[in-house]
Image (cartoon, rainbow, N blue to C red; front, side, top):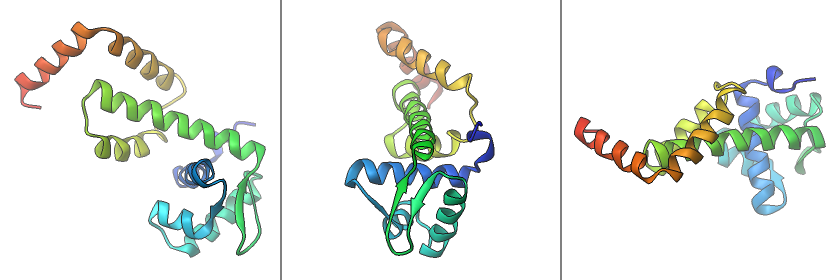
Length: 145
């Protein structure tokens, strides 16, 4: 079953937030998820219930939220897409980190499975080619961007 096709961008954001919190703090709490996403705790409760119904998280009210094996795989995939896109924006396009983070958060839900590996490959290629990077920077400067 392909979970990605059945998850909304919002659900993916919740999974990614839980994944990041667990990576940093070993646990995820509703309060921290709400703070991370800038949403209310009531919104978190609704989203966690939905993710639980899909078998992606385990939780008990007022307790910690844990990713299931399936949820962990999906969350890791979302986080990886995010990182690849953000890296492309920063290293190739020269976008500042904060703007790249925000844009990557939106793009990670829209870009398909054939685009992400190509972005990664292009970013790696671009970073290995000093002359291309320098020429692109000069080109952007000449355009005033």
